[in-house]
Length: 264
Image 1 (tube, one colour):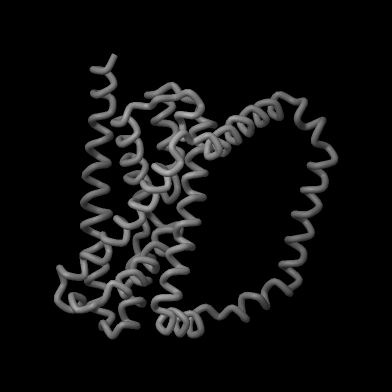
Image 2: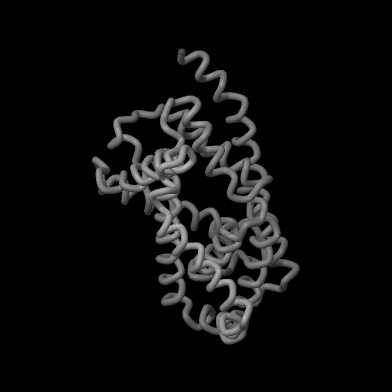
Protein backbone atom coordinates (compact mmCIF):
# COMPACT_ATOMS: atom_id res chain seq x y z
CA UNK A 1 0.00 0.00 0.00
CA UNK A 2 3.01 2.32 0.42
CA UNK A 3 4.54 1.58 -2.97
CA UNK A 4 1.94 3.51 -5.05
CA UNK A 5 2.85 6.62 -3.02
CA UNK A 6 6.49 6.26 -4.09
CA UNK A 7 7.87 4.51 -0.99
CA UNK A 8 9.89 1.29 -0.95
CA UNK A 9 10.20 0.37 2.74
CA UNK A 10 12.75 -2.27 3.69
CA UNK A 11 11.24 -5.69 4.44
CA UNK A 12 12.91 -6.03 7.84
CA UNK A 13 11.82 -2.56 8.97
CA UNK A 14 8.24 -3.47 8.04
CA UNK A 15 8.50 -6.78 9.91
CA UNK A 16 10.16 -5.28 12.99
CA UNK A 17 7.59 -2.47 13.22
CA UNK A 18 4.66 -4.93 13.06
CA UNK A 19 6.14 -7.18 15.78
CA UNK A 20 6.85 -4.14 17.98
CA UNK A 21 3.23 -3.06 17.45
CA UNK A 22 1.90 -6.49 18.51
CA UNK A 23 4.16 -6.45 21.57
CA UNK A 24 2.99 -2.95 22.55
CA UNK A 25 -0.65 -4.07 22.31
CA UNK A 26 0.05 -6.60 25.07
CA UNK A 27 0.48 -3.66 27.45
CA UNK A 28 -1.71 -0.86 26.08
CA UNK A 29 -4.65 -1.93 23.87
CA UNK A 30 -4.68 -0.45 20.33
CA UNK A 31 -1.50 1.56 20.97
CA UNK A 32 0.45 -0.67 18.61
CA UNK A 33 -0.96 1.00 15.49
CA UNK A 34 0.54 4.36 16.53
CA UNK A 35 3.83 2.74 17.57
CA UNK A 36 4.00 0.91 14.23
CA UNK A 37 3.47 4.14 12.28
CA UNK A 38 5.97 6.01 14.46
CA UNK A 39 8.61 3.29 14.06
CA UNK A 40 8.22 3.17 10.27
CA UNK A 41 8.23 6.96 10.08
CA UNK A 42 11.47 7.14 12.08
CA UNK A 43 13.40 4.48 10.18
CA UNK A 44 11.93 4.90 6.67
CA UNK A 45 11.30 8.67 6.61
CA UNK A 46 7.65 8.24 5.60
CA UNK A 47 4.95 10.70 6.70
CA UNK A 48 3.31 9.52 9.94
CA UNK A 49 -0.13 10.59 8.64
CA UNK A 50 0.20 8.57 5.43
CA UNK A 51 1.36 5.55 7.41
CA UNK A 52 -1.65 5.85 9.74
CA UNK A 53 -3.92 6.03 6.70
CA UNK A 54 -2.56 2.74 5.35
CA UNK A 55 -2.73 1.13 8.81
CA UNK A 56 -6.37 2.18 9.24
CA UNK A 57 -7.06 0.80 5.76
CA UNK A 58 -5.32 -2.40 6.86
CA UNK A 59 -7.65 -2.57 9.89
CA UNK A 60 -10.71 -1.94 7.70
CA UNK A 61 -9.68 -4.90 5.52
CA UNK A 62 -9.22 -6.95 8.70
CA UNK A 63 -12.77 -6.13 9.81
CA UNK A 64 -14.16 -7.03 6.39
CA UNK A 65 -12.23 -10.31 6.56
CA UNK A 66 -13.54 -10.98 10.07
CA UNK A 67 -17.12 -10.45 8.89
CA UNK A 68 -16.49 -12.90 6.03
CA UNK A 69 -15.21 -15.43 8.60
CA UNK A 70 -18.33 -14.84 10.73
CA UNK A 71 -20.51 -15.37 7.64
CA UNK A 72 -18.78 -18.65 6.72
CA UNK A 73 -18.99 -19.84 10.34
CA UNK A 74 -22.68 -18.88 10.52
CA UNK A 75 -23.48 -20.96 7.43
CA UNK A 76 -21.20 -23.90 8.27
CA UNK A 77 -22.04 -24.22 11.98
CA UNK A 78 -25.38 -22.40 11.94
CA UNK A 79 -27.00 -24.61 14.58
CA UNK A 80 -24.28 -23.85 17.16
CA UNK A 81 -23.82 -20.19 16.27
CA UNK A 82 -27.52 -19.34 16.09
CA UNK A 83 -28.30 -20.93 19.46
CA UNK A 84 -25.45 -19.03 21.10
CA UNK A 85 -26.65 -15.69 19.73
CA UNK A 86 -30.20 -16.28 20.93
CA UNK A 87 -29.06 -17.18 24.45
CA UNK A 88 -26.35 -14.57 25.02
CA UNK A 89 -26.75 -11.39 22.97
CA UNK A 90 -29.88 -9.92 24.67
CA UNK A 91 -30.40 -7.56 21.74
CA UNK A 92 -33.81 -6.37 22.91
CA UNK A 93 -32.37 -5.13 26.22
CA UNK A 94 -29.58 -3.26 24.43
CA UNK A 95 -32.02 -1.61 22.02
CA UNK A 96 -34.18 -0.45 24.93
CA UNK A 97 -31.30 1.78 26.09
CA UNK A 98 -31.47 3.73 22.81
CA UNK A 99 -34.99 4.86 23.75
CA UNK A 100 -33.93 6.26 27.14
CA UNK A 101 -33.66 9.98 27.91
CA UNK A 102 -29.89 9.75 28.48
CA UNK A 103 -29.29 8.33 25.02
CA UNK A 104 -31.51 10.97 23.36
CA UNK A 105 -29.71 13.76 25.29
CA UNK A 106 -26.28 12.39 24.29
CA UNK A 107 -27.30 12.19 20.61
CA UNK A 108 -28.72 15.74 20.82
CA UNK A 109 -25.50 17.19 22.27
CA UNK A 110 -23.41 15.36 19.68
CA UNK A 111 -25.63 16.64 16.84
CA UNK A 112 -25.39 20.23 18.18
CA UNK A 113 -21.58 20.19 18.23
CA UNK A 114 -21.42 18.64 14.75
CA UNK A 115 -23.68 21.39 13.34
CA UNK A 116 -21.62 24.06 15.16
CA UNK A 117 -18.37 22.69 13.72
CA UNK A 118 -19.88 22.62 10.22
CA UNK A 119 -21.10 26.23 10.43
CA UNK A 120 -17.77 27.52 11.83
CA UNK A 121 -15.55 25.27 9.71
CA UNK A 122 -13.89 28.06 7.66
CA UNK A 123 -12.93 30.04 10.76
CA UNK A 124 -11.64 26.93 12.50
CA UNK A 125 -9.60 25.71 9.51
CA UNK A 126 -7.95 29.15 9.07
CA UNK A 127 -6.26 28.90 12.49
CA UNK A 128 -2.83 27.30 12.99
CA UNK A 129 -4.41 24.33 14.70
CA UNK A 130 -6.94 24.04 11.88
CA UNK A 131 -4.17 24.08 9.25
CA UNK A 132 -2.28 21.40 11.17
CA UNK A 133 -5.43 19.26 11.35
CA UNK A 134 -5.98 19.78 7.61
CA UNK A 135 -2.45 18.57 6.88
CA UNK A 136 -2.95 15.50 9.06
CA UNK A 137 -6.31 14.69 7.46
CA UNK A 138 -4.92 15.06 3.92
CA UNK A 139 -2.02 12.74 4.70
CA UNK A 140 -4.44 10.31 6.32
CA UNK A 141 -6.70 10.35 3.22
CA UNK A 142 -3.66 9.76 0.97
CA UNK A 143 -2.96 6.61 2.97
CA UNK A 144 -6.58 5.45 2.74
CA UNK A 145 -6.71 6.04 -1.01
CA UNK A 146 -3.64 3.84 -1.55
CA UNK A 147 -5.96 0.87 -2.09
CA UNK A 148 -6.99 2.32 -5.48
CA UNK A 149 -3.42 2.36 -6.80
CA UNK A 150 -2.10 -1.01 -5.65
CA UNK A 151 0.12 -2.29 -8.47
CA UNK A 152 -0.54 -6.01 -7.84
CA UNK A 153 -4.16 -6.31 -6.62
CA UNK A 154 -4.36 -10.10 -7.10
CA UNK A 155 -1.16 -10.57 -5.12
CA UNK A 156 -2.56 -8.31 -2.40
CA UNK A 157 -5.78 -10.38 -2.30
CA UNK A 158 -3.81 -13.65 -2.23
CA UNK A 159 -1.68 -12.54 0.72
CA UNK A 160 -4.74 -11.24 2.57
CA UNK A 161 -6.42 -14.66 2.21
CA UNK A 162 -3.25 -16.49 3.28
CA UNK A 163 -2.97 -14.31 6.41
CA UNK A 164 -6.47 -15.29 7.55
CA UNK A 165 -6.01 -18.96 6.67
CA UNK A 166 -2.87 -18.94 8.85
CA UNK A 167 -4.83 -17.23 11.65
CA UNK A 168 -7.39 -20.05 11.47
CA UNK A 169 -4.73 -22.78 11.45
CA UNK A 170 -3.08 -21.28 14.54
CA UNK A 171 -6.33 -22.02 16.39
CA UNK A 172 -7.31 -25.30 14.76
CA UNK A 173 -3.92 -27.05 14.89
CA UNK A 174 -3.70 -26.34 18.63
CA UNK A 175 -6.71 -28.67 19.02
CA UNK A 176 -4.42 -31.64 18.29
CA UNK A 177 -1.98 -30.73 21.07
CA UNK A 178 -4.63 -31.10 23.81
CA UNK A 179 -6.42 -34.36 24.61
CA UNK A 180 -9.97 -32.98 25.26
CA UNK A 181 -10.08 -31.03 21.96
CA UNK A 182 -8.24 -33.34 19.54
CA UNK A 183 -11.52 -34.86 18.23
CA UNK A 184 -13.12 -31.50 17.30
CA UNK A 185 -13.82 -30.75 13.65
CA UNK A 186 -12.48 -27.98 11.43
CA UNK A 187 -15.93 -26.35 11.73
CA UNK A 188 -15.49 -26.18 15.50
CA UNK A 189 -12.03 -24.77 14.87
CA UNK A 190 -13.47 -22.04 12.66
CA UNK A 191 -16.08 -21.02 15.28
CA UNK A 192 -13.43 -21.13 18.02
CA UNK A 193 -11.18 -18.97 15.86
CA UNK A 194 -14.03 -16.53 15.24
CA UNK A 195 -14.81 -16.20 18.97
CA UNK A 196 -11.10 -15.83 19.73
CA UNK A 197 -10.73 -13.13 17.06
CA UNK A 198 -13.64 -11.21 18.62
CA UNK A 199 -11.88 -11.56 21.97
CA UNK A 200 -8.71 -10.06 20.49
CA UNK A 201 -10.69 -7.15 19.00
CA UNK A 202 -12.03 -6.32 22.48
CA UNK A 203 -9.89 -3.47 23.96
CA UNK A 204 -8.07 -5.52 26.58
CA UNK A 205 -4.25 -5.88 26.76
CA UNK A 206 -3.50 -8.25 23.90
CA UNK A 207 -6.95 -9.83 24.26
CA UNK A 208 -6.03 -11.10 27.72
CA UNK A 209 -9.12 -12.38 29.53
CA UNK A 210 -11.60 -11.63 26.75
CA UNK A 211 -9.92 -14.18 24.44
CA UNK A 212 -9.94 -16.86 27.16
CA UNK A 213 -13.58 -16.25 28.10
CA UNK A 214 -14.96 -16.35 24.55
CA UNK A 215 -12.93 -19.40 23.47
CA UNK A 216 -13.95 -21.21 26.67
CA UNK A 217 -17.63 -20.40 26.01
CA UNK A 218 -17.32 -21.53 22.40
CA UNK A 219 -15.77 -24.88 23.28
CA UNK A 220 -18.44 -25.42 25.93
CA UNK A 221 -21.00 -25.38 23.11
CA UNK A 222 -19.15 -28.36 21.61
CA UNK A 223 -19.26 -30.33 24.86
CA UNK A 224 -15.84 -29.34 26.22
CA UNK A 225 -15.97 -28.68 30.02
CA UNK A 226 -15.19 -25.07 30.88
CA UNK A 227 -12.04 -26.00 32.81
CA UNK A 228 -10.68 -27.82 29.75
CA UNK A 229 -11.83 -25.00 27.48
CA UNK A 230 -9.92 -22.50 29.59
CA UNK A 231 -6.84 -24.75 29.53
CA UNK A 232 -7.00 -24.91 25.72
CA UNK A 233 -7.34 -21.12 25.55
CA UNK A 234 -4.25 -20.79 27.74
CA UNK A 235 -2.27 -23.17 25.48
CA UNK A 236 -3.20 -21.20 22.36
CA UNK A 237 -2.79 -17.78 24.00
CA UNK A 238 0.56 -18.48 25.65
CA UNK A 239 2.13 -20.02 22.55
CA UNK A 240 0.81 -17.35 20.15
CA UNK A 241 0.62 -14.15 22.18
CA UNK A 242 2.91 -14.43 25.17
CA UNK A 243 5.66 -16.51 23.59
CA UNK A 244 5.68 -15.62 19.88
CA UNK A 245 4.55 -11.99 20.18
CA UNK A 246 6.62 -11.16 23.27
CA UNK A 247 9.73 -12.96 21.98
CA UNK A 248 9.71 -11.48 18.47
CA UNK A 249 8.54 -8.09 19.77
CA UNK A 250 11.43 -7.77 22.23
CA UNK A 251 13.84 -9.09 19.60
CA UNK A 252 12.58 -6.47 17.13
CA UNK A 253 13.05 -3.68 19.70
CA UNK A 254 16.69 -4.73 20.02
CA UNK A 255 17.42 -5.42 16.35
CA UNK A 256 15.76 -2.52 14.52
CA UNK A 257 18.23 0.21 15.61
CA UNK A 258 21.17 -2.16 14.99
CA UNK A 259 19.89 -3.09 11.53
CA UNK A 260 19.35 0.53 10.50
CA UNK A 261 22.72 1.63 11.87
CA UNK A 262 24.41 -1.01 9.71
CA UNK A 263 22.18 -0.16 6.72
CA UNK A 264 23.48 3.41 6.78
